[in-house]
Amino acid sequence: MSKFRLPTLTRRAFLASSAAAAAGAMMPLHSPSPAQAAPLREVTLRAAPGRVRLLPAADAETPAWSYNGSVPGPEIRVKQGERLRITVENGLAEETTVHWHGVRVPNAMDGVPYLTQPPIDAGKSFVYEYDAVDAGTFWYHPHQRSFEQVGRGLYGPLIIEEPEPIRVDRDVTWVLGDWRLTKSAEISDDFGNMHDAMHGGRIGNTVTINGHVPDAFAVRRGERIRLRLINAANARIFGLDFADHKPIIAALDGQPVEPHAPDGGLVVLGPAMRADVILDMTAASGSRVSVTDRFYEGLEYRLVDLAYADTPLRDKMPDWPVVLPPNPLREPDMTAAIRHEVTFNGGMMGTMVMQEMGGSMGKGSSGGMGGGMMGNMGMMMDMMHTGGIWFINGVAAEGHVMKPMLTLERDRAHVIAMTNATAWHHPIHLHGHSFRVLSRNGQPTRYREWQDTVLMAPREKVEIAFVADNPGDWMIHCHILEHQAAGMMGVFRVA
Image (cartoon, rainbow, N blue to C red; front, side, top):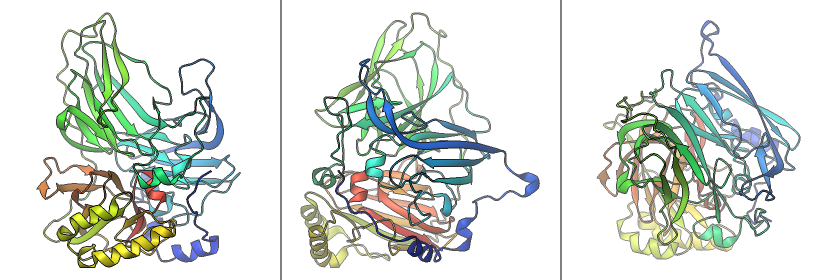
């Protein structure tokens, strides 16, 4: 049984709170005229309990929640510029929503309960409709009680293809899942426990690719694969080592980036993050090469083997271009950008880390910790006694509807200087926008990558920038879902 408190906002209160959002927030980002209407793709997703086969044993079935009877849910694959109309039917015994992670949708389509829509009641349905403005690798999942609904299997991939995709032999999606299973192959019912919330979140004991514990992935020497990696885990961070292969990252969080080899050879993905990897199959025919997850020191394990066929596809690797075309994102004007500061606090050892970092945390335009650190620490200690565990600028969320912590002037460039004043990693996700990652600990990033979720290491400082061009009230939160549910969630308003 989950331990986190749930918001008690009424439907009337939701309507009152949503009136504060600009009327433009209800409109699509791009509204084609009737003569230029985008092609419409219609999809139905039904969230419901069922049974899935996660483990290789023939008699091992796991009760889970899924979309359309499968984990992950069906891959929704459309072309950039198409319009999506997705009917979500709720076959659960509780409310749900669907959030389109990383997709720049109108505010009313963002799937955050009470903030952007009433949750979908049991037995009811809701229609989401929006334009696929950016090409890339995205995914969908609930934002209602996500720490449990995602943990029980409710997630799926959303792929938006470029009008002219780069040339590869295969375009493959791997949705990485993480499960906490009992000896009887059932999902452990300890959602929302205090230990997970205060530490690194709900890290499981079973990892799947596309809903199955993998053994081998069949490849051929000379083959080039575009491997779309999606981390759908509640809390597990992956650091994938492809052994003697040389992965090239072509996109992060759906947005193209200068093709490059990952730092240290590991493709690192925090929860909710994605990477498009160009992988050339260079090993010998008939061989097997293990892909190993090495993120947690001392807990490395073989994820899957690349199993080479006995005959090659070609004698040498292709030299096709791997640069992806840019998406229509507005470049922030750094000469006129407005600066804000945000500090993430709390969790086990949080007070100690704040004391260590106190002298280096300034106070910015949006109220970082700074000189008020000791007062904020006292306030946080009081909140921890009433259930708050994680904090943004000293405030722990108690549901999705909150007073905005930041108000961003619409169509202006903004810099958010973020400090992780905790002893744990946090993948910080902004809704409705993608941002450039400018610096880490004061050092400029090499690729100034566009992302929607940035993984912050303990005690790390990260600066991001974007144009606030999507009006409405939006979430900013840690995507370790237990951290989000235990307070590390806030609202920023674009108006």
